[in-house]
Amino acid sequence: MTDQFAKKSEAWSARFSEPVSELVKRYTASVDFDQRLALFDIEGSLAHAAMLQAVGILSEQDLESIRQGMARIRTEIEGGEFRWSIDLEDVHLNIEKRLTELVGDAGKRLHTARSRNDQVATDIRLWMRSTIDEIRALLRALRISLLDVAETNAATVMPGFTHLQVAQPVTFGHHLLAYVEMFTRDDERLADCRRRVNRLPLGAAALAGTSYPIDREQVARALGFEGVCTNSLDAVSDRDFAIEFTACASVLMMHVSRLSEELVTWMSPRVGFIDLPDRFCTGSSIMPQKKNPDVPELARGKTGRVYGSLISLLTLMKAQPLAYNKDNQEDKEPLFDTADTVTETLRIFADMIAGIQVKPERMRAAAAEGFSTATDLADYLVRKGLPFRDAHEAVALAVRQAAARGIDLSDLSVDELRAFSPLVGDDVSQALSLEGSINARNHVGGTAPAQVREAIRRHRAALAG
Ligand code: ARG
Image (tube, rainbow, N blue to C red; front, top):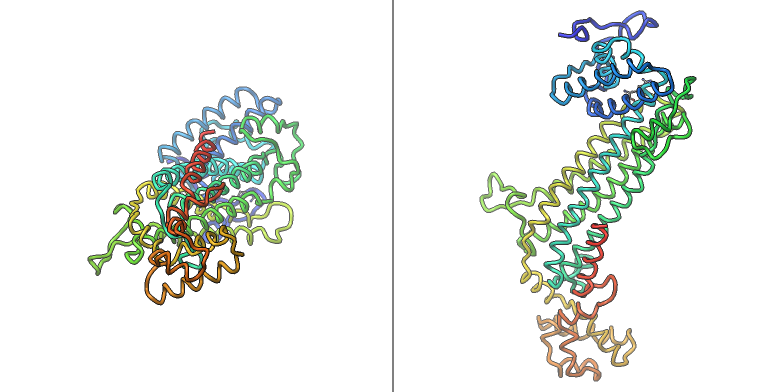
């Protein structure tokens, strides 16, 4: 056992006359959750140490000792052998203490020109940058799954809805592409957020900067930051970048929840547009016939906890005076939970969407009901010279009569339709057909299969570039 664990609780420093109580120790410690930042903490410390050596604060020998000690610590952490102790409060003090155990005074010199305040802000930014990159890669995979299913279904007709009432025919490919657009914007938002995350707080020290001749640009370059935070008070205290990340994640999950809701509806036997592979569904402990879409339901539910994290962080930051306050230690759990929820959800969704089993005949049958081509009949009459409002009224009458007889518009004969307007000709059946309806919407953003294929091509090119 290392002396780190053998010792009894000590006072925080010589400044204190007694140790904190057990309860306070547990209350104030963050190591149980912030140990997740360990490898980023080491990365930041190594960049800081290299800079201290370059400006003449650390000797070459000290730097070498720190590198060797950190390499060993990294191995211990990755191998699950590192002994975390809540006596040492957080990830930073645990690692620093172990370093000092391993390499002596060089370990004690590492904290020169640095504070845990700029250290933790740096760690979170490094962690968040890599999390954003991971989420963006997963968003890409999900979009590719959606594009693949959209391509196969570029001409698969389904009813489009407004108010959940059958509105006009669309293609299933077009419907899925709407989600590709949403997830593309989510990706853009994250990319934009990343620019503000990717700034170096180190050098701000506790709050005012440091009296040592540090080279912040060197540290920024070494850690891949695009620049340094240019006000020390702001650098250690604000967490707006974390709030922004959680806001991006909330919008993303809101989109996931919309898709989830549709998957659940489409899979209901009453609708029956799709089936999901068994590996994404579960049964009921009492009803043997059940196959439930648990994954989309859970994703819909988990959206709430991500919104919750956003509200937690906004409230955490609200009205905090400059500069660092211990409140900010509470930023980590909502962030980690958000990252875990979003990455797991996206990973499962990419796989699940790729496995959707489409039932085109059910979609088509639903599109053929509900007078989905009524607008097309009105447009037909407009093309023959009738003002749109009059055409709308004539078709409304036709729909009313068909509905009373329990048939669709396309079941009315040309003669019967002509009773509503003398402009109806023999070519009307083309306008009333599902294919006629979707093919007519042949412009950028429209549902015509040709446009759907073109949109897929554009998205694939953007994803490849
Ligand atoms: N564990 C702390 C946090 O997460 C690190 C910074 C502590 N700084 C301090 N002055 N107590 O925020």
